[in-house]
Length: 265
Image (cartoon, rainbow, N blue to C red; front, side):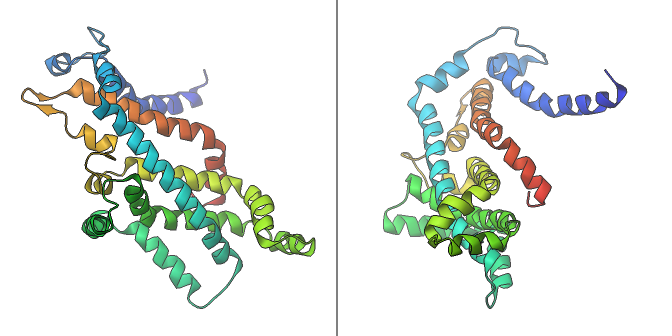
């Protein structure tokens, strides 16, 4: 091993240490976790995972989270694609100001919108549904998707549009069969960030749900008992929440690299 490889390896191991610690804790009992420091589980147990996979409160929490995150990602990308195309290809009065205003929505804290969304969704009957959380997260994810996709679209020559129209393509056909495949990297990057931001967001998801659509993050906050927090159970739940994000990262890893290269990530 060359010396120049030592520092990156040490850095990666340092970054992976919290994940290893979380996984190791998931195979321990709460008593063992509180009893002292141990690098490996002294008494390996699967009881924490058994609770999650047998208790409907836990496994439905994962299903609920995946459901509204998927809905949000689909809506955000579907809406952002034509909006980003308009910002990329056309110039109109106030376009730069409107583009900046979209980004300011992403900068606003979620707590600002929690009460208005709660009152609105309660009034129209959307409270405690997947659609409620998915639409609330669109407030942040659509501006982010527009910003990312506009950067990728700006790298596609306008001559591509003109050539397609000369060849007789209608706009919907050109957009679906030629333009979107040309920016599939951007779509992958935008979908990744929509998924991740929606997956880790807790305040709106917890405020806008009660029972039927309660996310796993809200379930994890209710593990206290008379003996204290069930730390092993929390660690097991935390370990399982990493898996969906890891899967998404695996499939879009090449697209994310291209996003960094284009300066939009």
